[in-house]
Length: 89
Image (cartoon, rainbow, N blue to C red; front, side):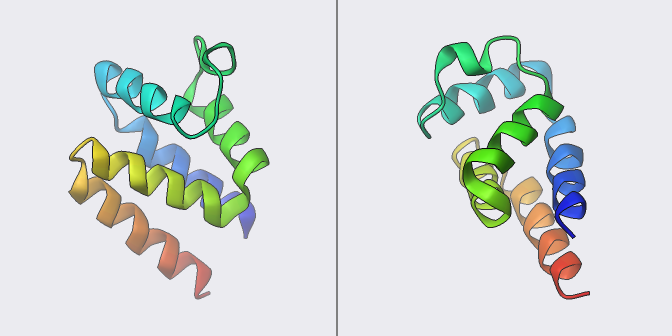
């Protein structure tokens, strides 16, 4: 089940444009990640780091919070719905 959530996070974050990805990483620094941890970070490595640090629920919550701060509310809502439906299986 965990890999399913990782896939959902990866797919959602892959939709961000390059400048949006930079803003996402900037916000992630406010959630306890150092600049060196996120330097040249890919979506895959970032999802892995969030899962390691926050576990499944925390990684999802962190992603949703940042997407909403970036005014990506539709994307956040879609991710939230997909995560809820995947955990009800």
